[in-house]
Amino acid sequence: MTTSATARTSTQMVAWLDDPGLEHDRVGGKAVSLNRLASFGFRIPPGFCLTTDAFAIQARGLPGSDALGADPEILLDAGRRSALVEAMTAGPLAPAVASALAGPLERLDKLGLGDDGGAPLLAVRSSSIAEDGLTASFAGLHDTELGLTADEVAPAILRCWASLWSERAIGYRTRRGLPLGRDAMAVLVQALVPARAAAIVFTRHPVSGRADQLLINAAPGLGEAMVSGLVTPDTIVVDKESAVVVEFTPGDSGEGPVLSDAVRDELIRLSLGVERAFGAPVDIEAAHARDGWYLLQARPITTA
Image 1 (spheres, rainbow, N blue to C red):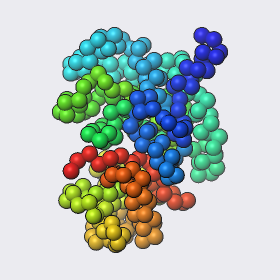
Image 2 (image 1 turned 30 degrees about the vertical axis):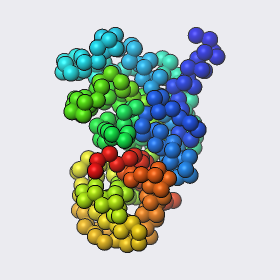
Image 3 (image 1 turned 180 degrees about the vertical axis):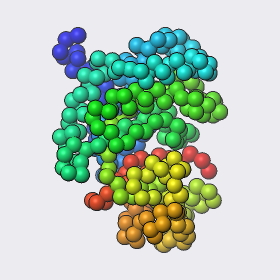
Image 4 (image 1 turned 120 degrees about the vertical axis):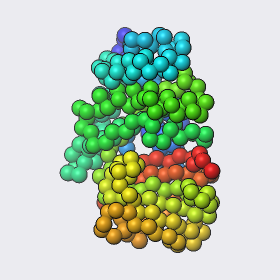
């Protein structure tokens, strides 16, 4: 392959989150949502997306990939599905993918976003083309790995790709009647926000369905324990018109409210701003660091 062809292929495999006009079929739902947030002026952690082109290159080298392309229904066979997952996670990255990844990782390292001004720890997150849509969110079904060094990114990418074929992800597609052969996985690589607190916000109450109420779940730290259900977060219900808290249920942090009044009110304003920008109720993930809130995700609320 010529130098120019290699550079062109690398460009196709990497898209920065602040690039204009990212294509959904190349970067997936999560990356498109983050790119949309950035285009509206909201702050997101810097990073890039390893596109579905990279996934396709890696997948073509797997034993059984031809059979999968011809008949996606083989994913319903537990043995054949497990074999694909094991082959993907075993790696290594295809040479072209590894080459495309090296430069962007070096660029993130040089941003000096770590606590000491050095290289930041990184987050590797799935972004399949079926995620975060209007009819299916795939929330929590595909892999996310946090607190990684640059050397740990490549195997994490392989595990994210493999999670496209996990038992729970295939079960979700089957239950919802979604086609098995029309999905592909992009992967986000971002600087990890050194979060003091994390929050999940629903701009429509997820239990009552009330559109006039906003619900916040907040927990100390990065928030993965909250997302995974390992800790009980503070629960805050807010009247959207007045921005007044109408209900507060403490979690199990044992140290009083996770969010101060000022930090909470800033999050309320930010969340209502995202809802206005998207033109629909949204489910938001956010992290609060020393310099304020970062948005990690925003997706349409897909259930009534």
